[in-house]
Image (tube, rainbow, N blue to C red):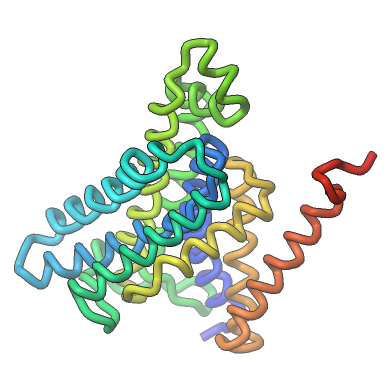
Length: 288
């Protein structure tokens, strides 16, 4: 096996995952002005619900469809029933509420399946594809193609559809958008729904390869946030930053060891935060 080639393959799969997670985070942040720390729970919920239903004998396609619906319902319900009624609260308080929602989701998942990792069968069962000394699982190829393809499709949705333009208008200035007749709350609900759907899709494609447990959601949120932060919270930029981040993490794991991945990734997050704050002075002013 060629270590470099295998690292590139792993990086492409991880990059597709981070792109899906990052775009959902950016859409919610830009439209609702909230960093949703429960974003990755849709990923974990998808895996847990699908594994549970498959274990009860429900056909795999039905299990996946139900699991994705539950994940999207979790994301949209968080906005509609928890955050929206408290929209006048300080942003920091709302972020803590999303963190609390993440821990509630964790508790429910522990009750459902316990603390051990769970998984479900892959959608695509076939021998891995051999590429330049590396092995690419067919499920992994689907993750790469669907992940980046859906990310591009979201960009086209934002640029070319009425609902997408309303999302962009809400993200730019919700008060001005409302004056122009945009239903801001509907746009925010759509953003949460798209974010939940992208996280669920990432779970459907990745979890058969790695399994999932009750702790996976917050880790995925943090990875998606790093990709989003590197892109400057731009839904277009996440496509490049997610890919670059996935390749970088794979190279760190291959040449330094898996134990170095988390410390290096969070060191990158610190560097990004320092870089993003270079124009900020005390009091919120910007340097000339």
